[in-house]
Image (cartoon, rainbow, N blue to C red; front, side, top):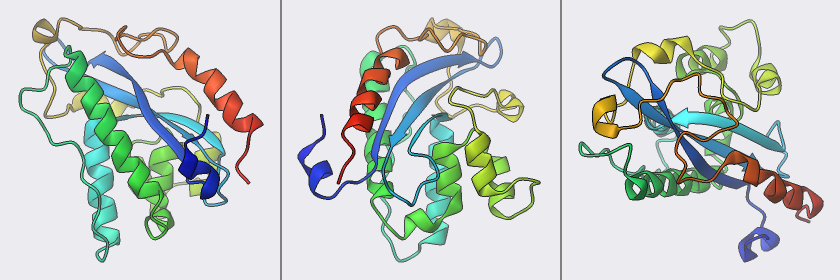
Length: 211
C-alpha cells in the first residue's frame, strides 16, 4: 500500500528496521539496523536494496553531506543518549523512527543525491572508510561496481570489530550479549519485525510501480 504522496510524486520508499545486537568483546556490544530501499528513480543503481548500518555510520553520513552541501540545512539525527539501553524496546524503536525520517528527508533532496557516498551508504556493504576511498577513486572498483556487487545480507566488516558507538553497553547491562555470527534468518531482538516479513511488501511495490 503506497502512501498518498507516493502516487503523486513518487520519492524512494525507504525504511529503517530489524535492529540487531552484536557483541564486540566481553564488555561492548553495538546495535545495527537494516535500511530497505525501493525506488523507480533513475538516480539509484538498484531498484531494491537492503544494507545494515550502525548509528555511528549515520552520524558519519550526515557529516559528509553537511560538508558537501553547505547551502542546505540538513535534517537532524536522533540525538545521542548516554542512557540509551540496547534492551529497551521503546528507545530502540524511537531511534529507528528518527533514522528513517532522516533518510526520507535526505533522499528527497536532489542536491544531496549527487553525493556518491550517499549511494554507497544506502546500497553497498562497504564500510565508511572504504566508501571514502571509493568515492575518491582510490579503489580498484567504481561506485557502480561496488553497488552492483554488494550482497543483500550483512557483510561483517573487520574494521568495525575494533570500534563501538558511544551508545555501546556492557553485555551484562543489556542482557543481550549476542555474537556477530548470529544468522540473518533470526532476529536477535524478537520484539522487532523479522526481515522475512518484508518480502510481501516489496513484492507489492514491484507489482504496482509508480507512474
